[in-house]
Image 1 (cartoon, helix red, strand yellow):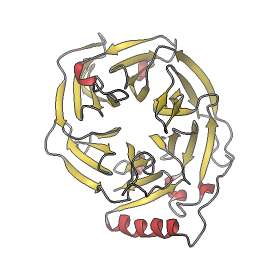
Image 2: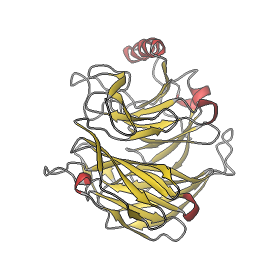
Image 3: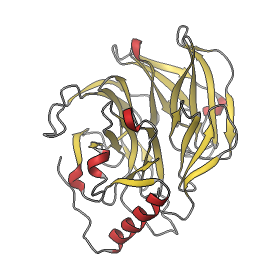
Image 4: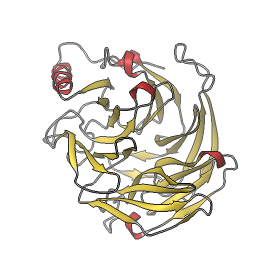
Length: 343
């Protein structure tokens, strides 16, 4: 990677990071990595070995972060390695793993100020089976397909790894696409009223998406709707590729970006950018509990996504942020996007 500028020691920003570190540790949380301004971390995936892959919205960069090494010096950019830049695309968003160390990423063209999304998107494969994180060499990147009619492809999840099927949300069209990563064929899989964007121009509909096994070939597809402030699931058959029941609204009134499912714990963890917090809700619906952050707290300013750790860290929740780039705390405070671990 090409390291960015490190934060100067002794600055107010560094003192803010140190204060946040002290606060986070008392809450069984800590900063894993802090990028310089302006950095919007959009999404995150966890490798089988526990390393983190994060996508950057403003620069179309894919970075690798070792949560053990980086946490020793979270504001040093030498601990984050840029695996690939997806130019000429300006942005990368959702990411999912289909086979071990075979990831797929959504690439698009987005500007934040003003907020403009150019129609169309592409999906790329990232093969890390021969990747060496010490030398930062060996990643193989290829384009899987173009989706010229897409609006804003956003969240991404693996639907059926055995068939190479992934799903992607379109936040403008209010739909979920299915893509066969082996053939490049894609189509709209689901389009429900609960996925639609609000009437206001530029509003986002369905955003994050995850798949949870239910029974046999049946699964639940979980999704949230940012504009409608909904968190939902829909029963779905992998054999027929059809829904098997109506959408269940699990909660309303909380506007989340992306989220993670914790089947072992029985909860979903949602990144709520409106309140700079991480909210927890039972997988079948129920009371919502804030487990980290708050409206005027900088711990997770502008949270964008959550991912569960793997292996010995399977109980850890990794959270990404945009650093308040769009909605700074008190209208002024911004910072570089960060990765936070919640235990």
